[in-house]
Amino acid sequence: MEVFQFLMPIFTEYGYLAVFVMLLICGFGIPVPEDVTLVTGGVIAGLGHADVHTMFAVGMAGVMIGDGLMFTLGRLYGQRISQLPGFRKILTPERFASAQDAFHKYGKWVMFVARFLPGLRTPVFFSAGMSQRVTFPTWFLMDGFAALISVPIWVYLGYFGAQNWDWMFSVLRQFQHGIFALLGLGVAWLGWRWRRKRQSDAGNTPSDPS
Image (cartoon, one colour):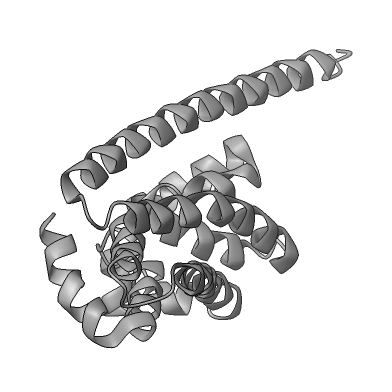
C-alpha cells in the first residue's frame, strides 16, 4: 500500500514514461514490487489519465526490456558486472547459488517461474545469459509467455479496481496467493520429473565389469 501511494502521484504526473522507467528499474532487481507497479499503471488508466490498452503495451515493453537487459548484460559481461558494488547487493552469491540450483533441477522452465519470483528473477536471467547455454529466443519465449500471463492480470485489475481500492487490494492478494499456489504445484511437478530422470539415469549407468 505504501508503494502504491508513493507511485500514484508520479504515474499520474508522468504517465507511460514513469511506468516504463519504473519497470526497467524493477528488472535490475531494485526492491519495488512489479505487480504493484503494473496495478498502479492500471489504476491511473482507470481514473482517466491513460489508455488501459496502451498501458498494457507499455507494461509488456517495460518488463521484457528490463529482463532482456539483465540477460544481455550477463551474456556480454558476466562476472565483471557481478563484481560491481551496486550489483553485488542484488546479485549476491546466495541468489546466484539458488539460481544455478534451479537451472540444474528445472532447466529452461525456471525462466518462466522466475517472472513471478521478484527475489530470483534478476539473478536467474543474469545467470541464464552468463551461462552461454540459453539462447536469446529461448529466454524471450519463456519470459514472454510468463509476462503475457502476469502483465494483463495486474494492469486490468488496476483498471477495473480504480474506483474501489479496497476491493482491488483484496483481489491482488488473492491473485498473489493463487499464483504462488500454482507455482508451488508446478515446481513440485518439475522436481518430481527431475528426480525420476536422475533415477532413470542411475539405473541405466553400466555397472563396473570388475
